[in-house]
Every structure is written in structure tokens, then in C-alpha cells.
Image (cartoon, rainbow, N blue to C red; front, side):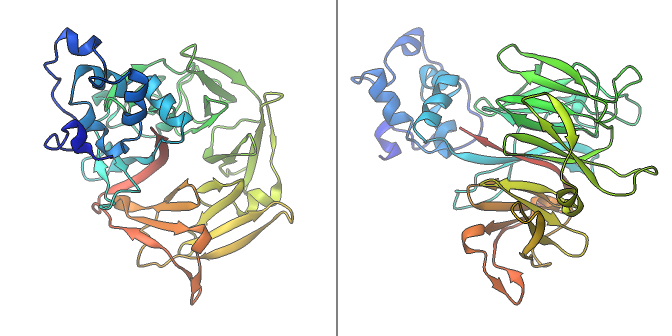
Amino acid sequence: MGLNRWGLFGYGTTMECRESGSNDKQSVGPLISGLPDDIALFCLGRVPRKYHAALKCVSRRWRDLLQSEEWCAYRRKHNLDETWIYTLCKDNKLERVCCYVLDPNSTRRSWRLICEPPSRALRRKGMGFEVLGKNAYLLGGCGWSEDATREVYCYDAARNTWIDSAPLSTARCFFACEVLNEKIYSIGGLGSESSDAHSWDVYDPRANNWKLHTDLNIVTEIEDSFVMDGKIYVRCGTSAAISHVYALVYEPSTSTWRHADANLASGWRGPAVVVDGTLYVLDQSSGTRLMMWQKEHREWAPVGRLSPLLTRPPCQLVAIGKNIFVIGKGCSTVVIDLDNAGNIGGVMMSSSIPKLNDKDDVISCKCLAI
């Protein structure tokens, strides 16, 4: 179905467009003249995501539709939603955070800057970054002269705008963030003097509030996290008292934390990602090597090394389908297709996406589908 059917050529594909001068009739009339709205939605819902910014420029009715939960739910229900990758980066030259987006299916395969986060958060460190539905959340953080904060900002990917969101129950920075059962978990980290050091927050989007929980097993030093088999795993940092790497696992049925398998924790020495129930970790201690956790044998197995000419550590991992994206400094990106990750001379076959610059460190990467 060609876009010229709706006369969209000429609107371009910019992330923003001026608000249409549509009158009230356009706001309440049919989506497409001569068609029932359900048929119009059937047609519009199949337009690729890269054209959605152009669709919003056609009329106020189309703009409101494409920014609605109904639109996202329809595309998700019919398996039409497309996943893009969002990264939270730190610009080391300007000493401020920024966010980029990548459409992995685009022929250009290049990262684009999205609208700037709120000014109050630009110079904070230790912020959490998580995605729920069509929204990305920027949570907590602190600064050189600013204590940890409870502030949360929400980025609506359909509107390309940031707004204030419900604040955390307690101030946090350098903590873990994960989504489980359609709720956001903010776990451990450093806080203000009044913060509970052994706590985690749970955000319910329906109630639009956070609920504080405590467990003595939770520690302040949280270095990484992932979700596997319906449970949250966090890797705890070492200290003078504890020299070995250890991990905790959250049991949602009892709302408690316990120590995870010691063998799993021993090999979890880098960013982690779960693909089809299998855990992968990028070991960056000597070059970059992808490792796989074998549940049945409770041991780690090497998948292969990555070319040092392509990766730019420190890297973060994210996965879409069977593809693992290794995203390093300047958003340099290596894509590993697990179905075709053969080895040549011990180095895994992969494709790459050029870096943007040399001044951005990648803090976190998340997938967001619309």
C-alpha cells in the first residue's frame, strides 16, 4: 500500500511537524473520507513506523490517533508494532546526558538524536532508564552539588516530548531498573540520608504511583540487572567486606530477594541480555567475548569473540528477536545474529553500524515498540 494513496509525499519524515490548522470538522470527521473508521484503522495501522511522523501532519484526527494508547494497542494486538532502540548517553565534552534512537530496520541504519531531556536532569549522574509501553522513563540521579533525587521524567515516544511523572518513593542514584509484569522496579542504589538502603520501588502505571518495599538482602551497590524466567536478577558490587561477585534474585510470588546461583554470578562480569530465555553476557575484561549461561549444566560457555576493530568498550547490550546489539562508545553498534553467528578464526561474524562520535559514553539501552 503506497503512501501516495493518502498524499503524504512532501511531508518528510522529521520527528516534529507544526500543528495542523485543522478545523473542528477534521477532528470529528472520519479518518479517511468514504471509509468506516475500523477499515481506516486497518489501513493506517499497517503503515511502517518510520512514516508515523508524516501521518501526524495530515490532520488533527490522525495526529491524535497516532499519539493514543488505542493506536499502540491495535498495532501490538495485530503484531504490527516495530521495535526501535533508545540509548541514554553521556556527552563527555559537554558533561550532559542525551538520548538517541535507532530504527534497526531502516536502510540507513543510523542513530538519531531525540528531543533533549528536561534541563534539570541534563547534568545528573546515576540516573535510571527504563521503558514501559510507549514511554521511556528517566529516574532519580544526583550531581556533584545535588543529593539524590526522587524526580522522574517520562518520554512519550509517540509525541516526542518529555513530561514530569510520579516521583520515586525515595531518592535514588546508581540503582537498577527493570520491568516485570507491566511494572517498573527501581532497586537499591545510593540515596539521601533519609532513604532506606535496603529498599526497592515499584511503579504501577495504572495507579500512577510508586510503592516502597524493603528487604535486608538489598544492598546499595548494584551494578547490573536483567529479567529471566519471570524473575529479576541484580549483580551486586564488591566491597572491602565482600571480594567476590554475587547476585540476588527477586521472587515475585513472595516479594522477597535471595542469593542467586553462585555459578551464574561468577561469570556475570559484564552487561547482560536474555534472548528466548537464554542469558548472554559480554565479557569485556580482555577484548570483547560473548558468553552464554547453560542452565542445565549450571556453567558458562563461550559463544565467540568480537572483532576489536568493531567494538568500542565500554558497551551495553540489547536484543530484538535473535539479534543482539552491542552498543559502545559513540553509539558504535555491532549486530550479532544468533542464528548465523558463525566463527572465522575464532571471531564471530557480525554486522556493524558506524559510530556517531568519540565523545558519548552509552549508559543504558532499551527497546520500545509502537
